Length: 90
Image 1 (cartoon, rainbow, N blue to C red):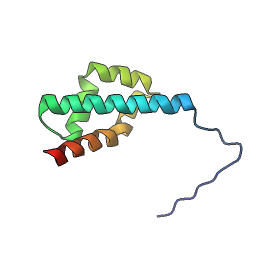
Image 2: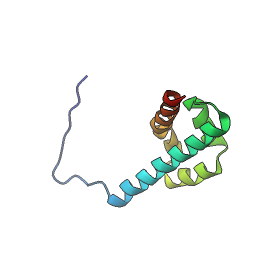
Image 3: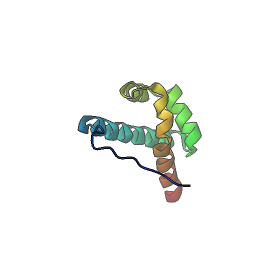
Image 4: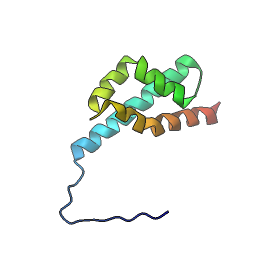
């Protein structure tokens, strides 16, 4: 597989505000994931993602901070990473 990057001098830069907002969202997702792992006693990332989307009030605030509500699925790697850390500890 190959990747070709085309870099244009006039391309827009990533906003510092957006990057900071993304870091805050990632941190909140990590915290909510840790809380659910402690509450449920399980580290299945698919179940945790579903619980976050369906039930967690904190995550509603996070979802509102994302441009599209479906973007929580794109943050799945964060949930999986936290679950893997807990699996390594247990």
